[in-house]
Length: 267
Figure 1 (cartoon, rainbow, N blue to C red):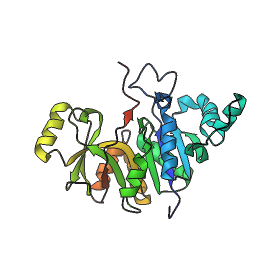
Figure 2 (figure 1 turned 135 degrees about the vertical axis):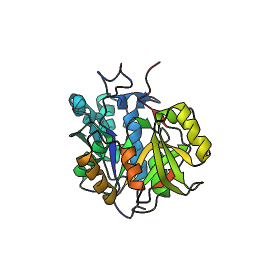
Figure 3 (figure 1 turned 90 degrees about the vertical axis):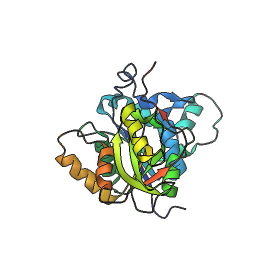
Figure 4 (figure 1 turned 30 degrees about the vertical axis):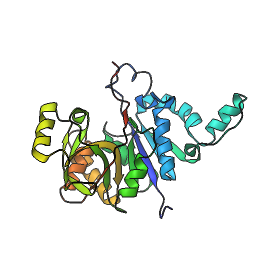
């Protein structure tokens, strides 16, 4: 049972420039996964965690779609659809019981900005961040992160190192090996040669790949605000976490559940 409310910020503030053909028309978070928009899976994941509230921080470009999103992704939506379609009203999925807000991202085009916008809207510094373009169809990623994380401490979800996938992930260098380790450093999306050198230097157990799920604390959010104020470029959450980890413990929780990257370009 939860000892305190859990709030989830779903970072969907990007324009999907990697997918190109989709992004001028639909957010990549609405690309279908197993017959449903990817964002629906992320909301289900938040509901399985036991979240009380979730806020989707979207790019302002997609604001005209949000009235529709509120109709189909908030409590009671499925029942309304079934009644309008003269279908039997069936089982209410967990996500339908989750309070979901949609807010446009304000500030610079960056995932740190999405996290800060969401925390400000929720009026709490104790949150989980889920990147909407990383979809876990099993809906277990946030629950695994929270179950293994130290209470009230920052943590990130990671997967075992994979040389072929390293170029599209942040590569964490862990302090220690095995399931109980902390972040010691990070290399953002290294090319294959660099990733191979990391594996050769550190072994294959110490490097891990970021999985798009983060547990933030009030202290870490204070650090992110300072970085956002003083950074000349768009601050990236993974880089900010690595800087925070130089002086604070950031737990690395490793799982093997595959994620689907909705930002992968069409072939």
